[in-house]
Image 1 (cartoon, rainbow, N blue to C red):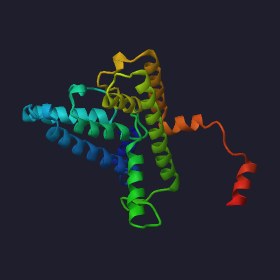
Image 2: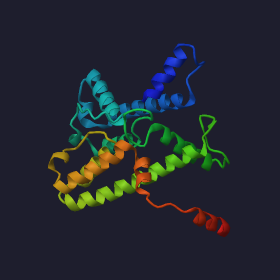
Image 3: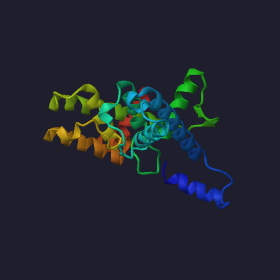
Image 4: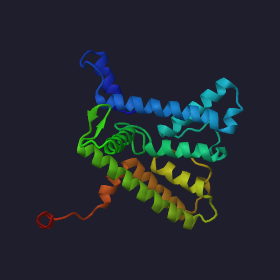
Length: 238
């Protein structure tokens, strides 16, 4: 969940702060929500897990959901054997990923929370974006939206290239490989060991982008920016 939670909790327990900060509360609530919903869905929907004894079913489902959502990369259940319905759940968990100020990848739980606030406030016709009754700064919304846009573009481009280099791979297998690499998850449906040399380079690029951060990677690629004169010209036109 990130080192921010550790620092915030220690400050609260030591009396230096009255309560946990807003960001810590969002991280804890979103993480617990993903773990709870993901575990229940895996226990109910996945046929292979449903046949296990009750205690093993709970532990297997929880551990695998935790591993995907926190991008830890450990697997105690064969990923290649997962049903398509459960793969959708894993796609979602790996895309959102872990939380900021930590070692996990993905878009981050706080970015997803900001996007939820944006959608809810827009549909309700509010002039300000709020989440958990707190206003979200415009900068946070811009970062979350830009991060999602960069993520989708990189994912689409990488899938297109991998379908060219790994022509025999199934659609869901390639998609899982791309999302796992972008989130620095470390899970695979078995394609990693069969990648061509060019396919390996593509996955390495995705892992690098996911490790340094999708938005940071996108900013690094933006080599051109408007000059002061261009900005002034645009202001005059607008």
